[in-house]
View 1 (cartoon, one colour):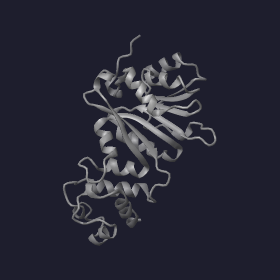
View 2 (cartoon, rainbow, N blue to C red):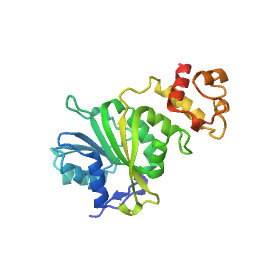
View 3 (cartoon, rainbow, N blue to C red):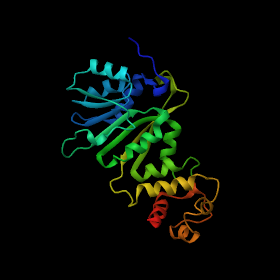
View 4 (tube, helix red, strand yellow):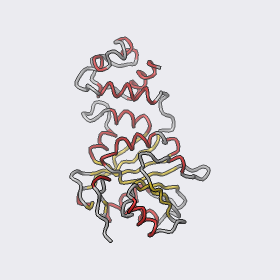
Length: 256
């Protein structure tokens, strides 16, 4: 029975075999990897990965797809976790000693940012992540300071990960086709992130970019004095997008 994509779950199923092959090559799965796929959908990517992997885990919200997956694969090959990836505890997945999780997925575009922030809390447990996302989101994730699209997402994720946009995927690779281009991003957790309290950094960055057309002295008024901004190595007349990760971390550490 054909599964109809559900808009409320942000379902767009990848079917292009060339693109699937390119993603698999980028992931480069190894037979004993502890691999977790978020939103396996109709299992196009799952099938590709299980050609190499002994076993993998998937996290799926759609109960109809959960039932389909459980019928299609034996439990010794695929463990299906029925639930919302936004609430899923990735630390609960058993990992052999000396290994870390490898996480992949075609992430629902309507929840991509909160899901990325949720996943960031598990970064120390992760070897790498390969995700399909809206191209504009990936461009924001990897943007350097000074870029028009550099912002809160860029700073917070670059604190935790080294990231690169691998390649762009056109709408016609999906069923139904989305209205935007997609892209594959590789995310490798930073071994030693700059020392900082995460919620404090988040508060500073959120305030800085809440009025990104203003100079940072005005954006952060009430949170920092001009002297503190200078102490963090920032020109008070710079705009938020001109300030690098290290300077935002310095500001956050001044608050603590």
